[in-house]
Image (tube, rainbow, N blue to C red; front, side):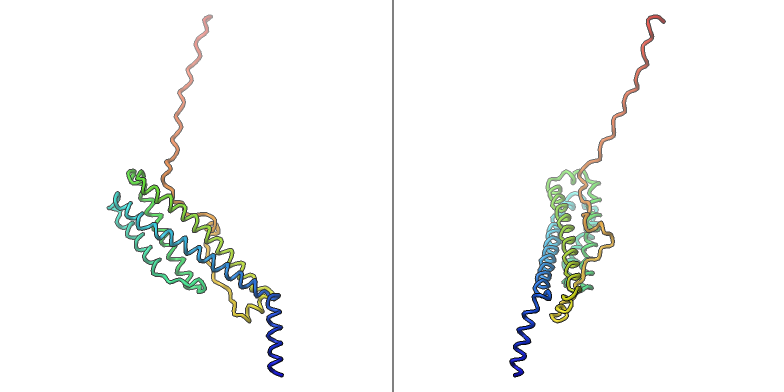
Length: 215
């Protein structure tokens, strides 16, 4: 009799789970995982561009050794982190390391302004364009991931999903922290190849009118 009661209880729970948001929780969890994979993919793409970028800059600006070393070391620190997106401390460490790499790259690109020959090098220009595109993709991937995690966390806190979440062990996920909301939608500026507009040519003064023949 007890076995029959347990069987009916299991059948009842299975029937109720879809109505309690179980399937939706699984779908949203998979969406978060997919979003995180895209974030990692874009960060990896940026990391893969750095060695060639450093090598190209070094060919023209060997004296900028400190800036080049900072970029190389920042990239190495990023590669050493085994990030766990479900752990808040691990995610924060990952975000901090990526932020330090972004700062190092920005300083490197500012330095290149002092080397016209480097700026005109086709390999450098190609790498610069790829880096700019990658930074944009990172911004988009991060923004989507933030929104996906927010959607998941909000959903599992609502009734009756909150009950299902407790039964299945679904917990809130940590998210990227954004000090400046504009950081979600604006990528770092990395294009230093466009020269400033030339100053306007001053107009010559208008000559005075000729005197009248009557005078």
